[in-house]
Length: 131
Image (cartoon, rainbow, N blue to C red; front, side, top):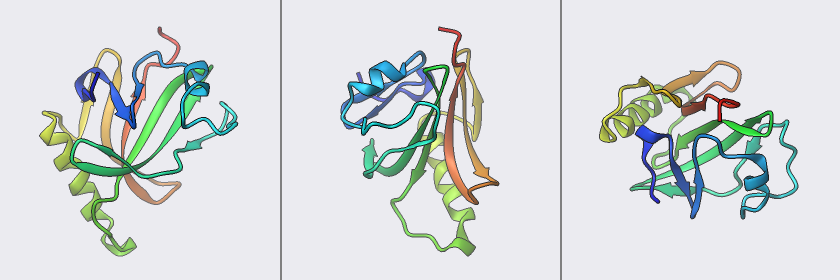
């Protein structure tokens, strides 16, 4: 199974993240390093999705994957030029036939800005707990 953003399926180094993915599944993955499911989980290494390289993180809610955050790192961007990263993310979503904010039955994908962290990323939010 490969990445299919329209279905909420993200393949990262062979691990398939999708609607309904549980923390128990995560514990069996190569990414598990004794993390706590109640905390923001940064994936340690860069990874490829298609032709782009990313850094990413996961958030679980009630032991079900709630959110994946992806930040494309194909190009180095200074803090003052972060808006260029937003355009890069918008272009990636466009290649997948998506708008900068697209709503599905399973959740939402958006290219947005994190006010707390001060960075742009692609956010995939699942309707956690519905599965």
